[in-house]
Amino acid sequence: MKKDQLLSRRRALLAGAAAVGAAGTAGALAVTSGGGPARPVTPAPGPPVHRPLGPSAYRLQPLTGYGAPRAAPPRPPVRSEPILRMSGRGRTMMLTFDDGPDPRYTPDILDTLARYGVRATFFVCGEMADYHRDLLSRMADEGHVVGNHTWSHPLLTRLGRRRIRSEMERTSEVVEQAYGEPPRWFRAPYGAWNRAAFQLGAELGMEPLAWTVDTLDWTTPGTGTIVDRVEDGAAPGVVVLSHDAGGDRSQSVRALRVYLPELLDSGYHLTVPRRRPV
Image 1 (cartoon, rainbow, N blue to C red):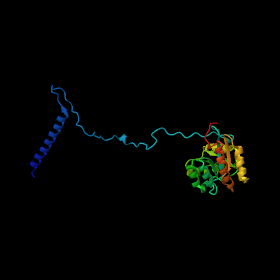
Image 2 (image 1 turned 135 degrees about the vertical axis):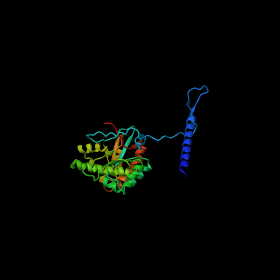
Image 3 (image 1 turned 30 degrees about the vertical axis):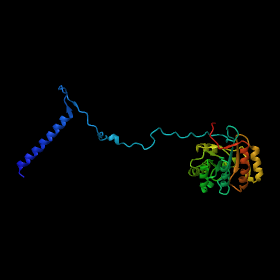
Image 4 (image 1 turned 90 degrees about the vertical axis):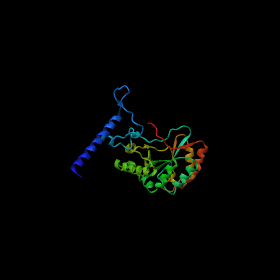
């Protein structure tokens, strides 16, 4: 193709582009019938035009936590003595079981409680709970409360702070993993409390709970004797101590089958602990 032909074609293309631009400008403006100033034409209906976002629009947004951060639950007070009884309306009592869980006795106790629709509190030892996490899961499913009874059931008054903390922390970790939440209550083995136990328990978010009526079932006094001790000590706010591990607890299992329905027939409501102010 000759040079003059190429120049002619380029001139034609430029002229066409200019014509299109002029037509677009003319279409974008409209003149009033009176010859007034031009005004923008209303755009035709249709989906809105998406303009490119500015650089700031691409900043990452948090996936969660759009609201204010949740406040951590307040620590319980550091007490100088354990709670011995629970306040409540009417004829309320609490049943507590220590040292388990033990697959020889704990399931029978859970069966009896389930039969009568009663919830109880189990103060578990970490080394037992670690081997029988399925029983802690069952306690959670059936609405029972699980408390911290240290890892190996030592006499806390003979231990230093570091060892006491380890006993409590290890047990709380197992309870949280198997039960679904950390324990909010703890009980010192043998009822031997000291200042370090109260302080460390509070730091771990736990309240100290003792008992009002001790069945002394660990001495295997006989099923009838255990029943009598519970029924003679029954009163509003009473906390009953029994055991589901740590030895032969068959008497404790049989005694529960007797005194539980009798307490219910007497109008007692068996419940679990709730936090209370100092």
